[in-house]
Length: 342
Ligand code: TXA
Ligand code: MG
Image 1: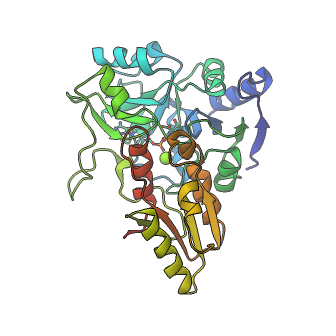
Image 2: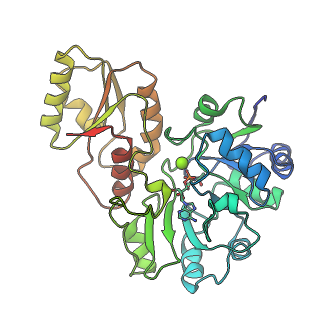
């Protein structure tokens, strides 16, 4: 299969490009497109064959359900039964935007989309290209992140092509995605609602609208997996990544010691931590200031991919010292990327 790459303006996408992508989706094709969080790999959500093709292209286990992207709250309601009142409240505050709501599935949603669950995850993306595509296709679009299974999510069209070239029909390339981490997934089928995946909308913001929102239950200890995205190892670079606790000085020591062992060391670090290193590692990916969670989020996945391509023996990263706002999601992604913690 030839993958077409179509560049589009990120704020005013060219209608011809959008129509081409929309037609491809309507025919059952696979289209990667930018959302405000990461690139998604879209398929016609009501076409089981298209959805099966999507799982194949990603190498994703069919037990891992997809997020359905829609144009607005009415379109979301059509895919659910008994939408709770709290959904409208949250939608008014956070849609379009990076909040995914898990609700009861209506019969029109194929079981392929939801991995056989009786619930469906839905969001309304804010990226102008995603919005234009949904408006032109007039379809619900099932879209996981457009990476091969277990690779970091793609924040640039090049990442999509690195993973999926030849496996999908088309990529709409609108440059880097602005947020860089995935949407927050909130389960509304239980009361109080529970965060299944930390993401771009932080817990504090959710609680300002719905104070009783609960944080994720601790990763299933042998029990049933509440959300397959909670797999402890998920965003894994191929190079083993070690997550280091402790302060910047002890991190610099770990880096020096590992280099002294003659290993090719890559460091993923905030600018401040990078400046505090005693020795220069083989490769450093700078995440920007540790005071700027948004900047770190925007760079994180590209930095992981860059280091993963640098033929290193090990990637070292210091755990972020904060747990508020977006940091919670960022630390969650580091933990999932880590092969070990020290
Ligand atoms: O920002 C995002 O959410 C991106 C963009 C493309 O929208 N999408 C994304 O999709 O990250 P994916 O497939 O990589 O992650 C979907 C997450 C997974 O953790 C999955 O388990 C969870 O949503 N999920 C989907 N349907 C669910 C359901 N019915 N119940 C519980 N969790 C669900
Ligand atoms: Mg994903």
